Length: 562
Image 1 (tube, rainbow, N blue to C red):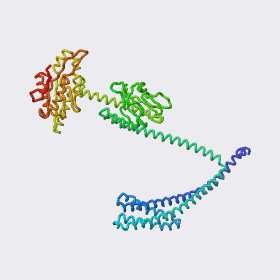
Image 2 (image 1 turned 180 degrees about the vertical axis):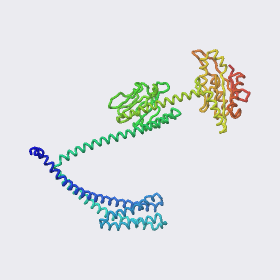
Image 3 (image 1 turned 30 degrees about the vertical axis):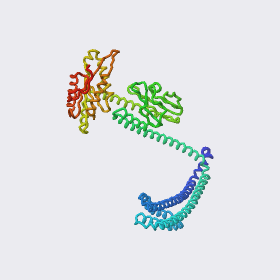
Image 4 (image 1 turned 45 degrees about the horizontal axis):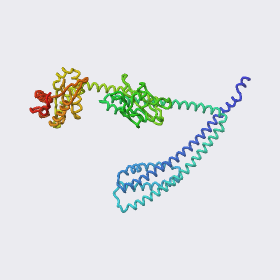
């Protein structure tokens, strides 16, 4: 007995009594909940009636507006609104009749409203789809339409007013029942208040944990989606960069994709000049940045240290000297390095102290790596392309490129029925020059002549080193007299050169020229080259430092032989 009394303590008795009240509480809760659900259903019913009424009012207004607009302007732009309203009005009227079946007063008003709307529809239908009306009848029809609209608005106002009164009554009834339910729950649940509080606290803790878990999951999912998007854009950019033919094209691709990848206010790509003593802006996106357009490499900490440099107001790091007025900005400089060669820097900037996040910095670092690989690849391709088509000594095009270009230009000249000029020049006494001054001086002479040809050629002209001391110039779309004039200018420029090699004067230099023209002296590559070569030999035989035209035995221009 003592053990039993010890077990059934007062708190246990209260617990069992409370448990005994649970079925009563559940029954009362069920009854109150049922009544509350019914009240809420009536509130929802009234709201549905009001919404349906509003739809009818809007559709009727649309019908009248479309009728009036179409009647005045005869424009089909009013028809879609009319057809849509014509389609939805009968359905809304049927829904309203079903919804107000429990209210005889509303049913009576609906019976008055329905013919008014039907007459509006009939008027609109007859005026829009029927035969044209006499203009003299328009005033009467407008007045009748206004009367119908006034009747509709009056009936709509009555129905809305009554339904709003019912809505307020039902909402009040719902509030009363909810209040009563609360009173019942409070009154009966005093014995369970501790359990309820504990359950509530535990439930809130669990909800909070679940929300945190869901938020973490959503954040992770968002990051994953962003990562997939960035990887996809990176892949697209890499593919396009690999297909770019030159640096300018690759810079356009970088600009477009960097703006999509990096969520910063502004960004810019700075690359070293050929001299490697300055860094200049190559491309930019977003707002105008606060960085200098051209600066020295030592002005950027990223270039000096060879690693990413961050300027923000958390770490209070040092600003690069190429930044101007950096008080309210956060920036990141990422060096662009390919195979140990620093090519420039990727600069990102946010205004108003908006920090550049760690994931954005990592993305910028990956983007800089891709840019470095692409620019290095393009530079290598340009080098290989130049090696394949350029003469390494003079920088002019080589013989293979000349032959391909001449063949292409001849085909173009034939297709467009336009002239073409071809000139072969040979440096006079070049072997003697080499023997006298040495091969280094000879190479210098060839470079200088190549520079003269490159500077004095027109845009579109093709200057090539044919071999040894011979050069070829192709003049597309140039008449023979123009070719002769340009050639003579080149001859005079070469003859006027004053060269020195290690302080030693190299004396007077001259060149002989053979000129051929398409189609006068040939229609193929071989024929034009052969004709120009024969003219060159005539110039040599006639004393050098002169211009000879193929087929013309009189000298065109000459100076005193050297």
